[in-house]
Image (cartoon, rainbow, N blue to C red; front, side):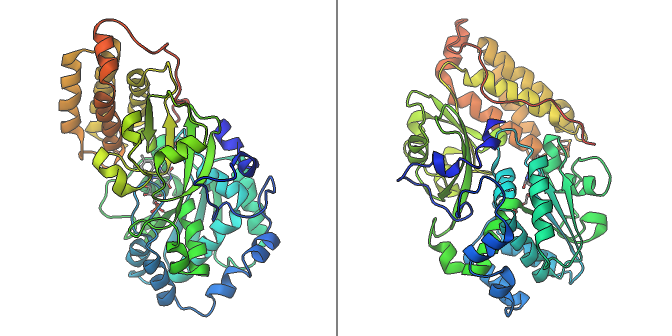
Length: 432
Ligand SMILES: Cc1cc2nc3c(=O)[nH]c(=O)nc-3n(C[C@H](O)[C@H](O)[C@H](O)COP(=O)(O)O)c2cc1C
Ligand code: SF4
């Protein structure tokens, strides 16, 4: 996908002023992975020089004070998760989650390809804090795998076994328990929880699953300290965030912005079409925001919450003119329904039924189908073993309220869209 090809042009794409900032994406434009020697000289020593004398408790405290939250979508406090694994004592397992199975995301792949040592610093730090005995690094693409393998050969400080593996291709395969099952040789399908993976994960061992971007931030936090990290972003949501921007923008790609940056500022500087009607925030589990609504909102959980949205893993898609948001949502919902592992009722029966209802709404604005959509959403929500159905229901609900003019038009047999699609739907992949 073109988004994944923007790594080398990041600096070229960036305007001279605007909300952009660089922490994870700082450094020279090399057109490829930053070698260890550059990484170490740029950051003033290797990670052990910075953290060597600090014990696990001090490192964990540094992390807690930074307020770092996971960047894989859920936004869980990273220090709490580490503490939950650490309480089981040494010998745990760490999984770096770079599966990035969301079709319009590209930030983890980009980080692994451009700045693998930032991620490996984070991995090294958490394995030391936990006294872990085994780690896995899961990447999405062949170039990311190659960059990580080269970077691993450059370092001598990762003393535990680290398996570098290509992630599962199915959408739910990026969910932490599915990923663990897959790393065990099983299908990439979620497990019923509890037990939580922090208690019983890979082969029954306490397991820390952390997103690629989270670990890259974590490495910098432990080097430069919580105050440095809190120097950007919001008091409750500190730091920067990688945003993958696609759709009706002149400069699609991955950008780094402080959390709390106004959405209009991000869109404007990325060359957004001012006539675009809606923005999908949070990817395929996300929410549609209409253009006027976007004006008052910022990229933060607190700002987006009242609008029923969340930044998720930082995926933004601006719906191009002439593309019908109802039809797009119907397509994506059908795709999400096909992705469900069909292990639980909500996925096996609920999502396909909701997808048909939403497509009927998109076809003719059917009031009955709209009511069914609402009813089935209520029945499905919270009933799956994982969050997949909840994410899909969120998208469907948001589509049903975000496009009232389109609904009216469809009821009269007209559609403002030209039936061209904007959101990519890769072939449905099998969990193994
Ligand atoms: C259906 C589904 C797919 C997911 N896919 C990913 C993914 O591709 N990458 C990722 O890091 N997290 C993904 N997650 C979230 C993970 O389960 C997990 O919460 C995350 O890796 C934890 O990392 P963090 O705390 O650093 O955010 C997914 C969750 C669900 C429900
Ligand atoms: S809710 Fe769906 S995706 Fe999640 S475990 Fe159940 S069947 Fe699988």
